[in-house]
Amino acid sequence: QVQPVESGGGSVQTGGSLRLSCTAPGFTSNNCGMHWYRQAAGKQREWVSSIDTVDTKNYEDAVKGRFTISQDKAKDTVYLQMNSLKPEDTAMYSCKMFGVDWCSHTPWGQGTQVTVST
Image 1 (cartoon, one colour):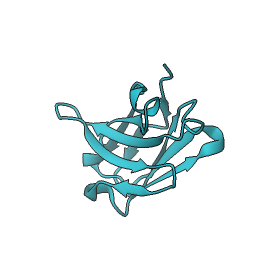
Image 2: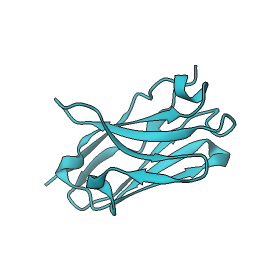
Image 3: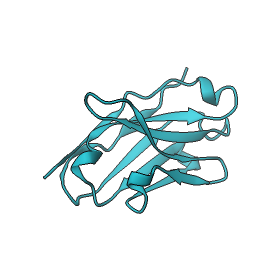
Image 4: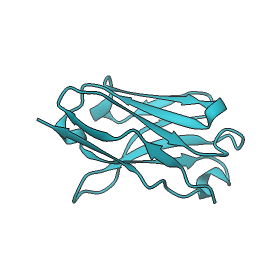
């Protein structure tokens, strides 16, 4: 199975920005959508944002107005632009495909760490 590959994480100060990428071969040809999730140390994984095949975008309330999800179908890649970062955004960010059959059975990516300091 194809595992998505996340990148773009790092350490920034409060108010900074990062752009995460999730590249997943087969994402476009199999008509998948993509979720972004995050998991902070000692906490459960939580859903952050998603984008579907017709570009419908959804966000968790805590990131609305600060995060923007987008996709480049030609590159099988989904992006998460994160602005005005806060310390509570610190977490491991992972992506997961969703949709019919093939999409829903793809594995999680290994994640990319985002650390926001005061």
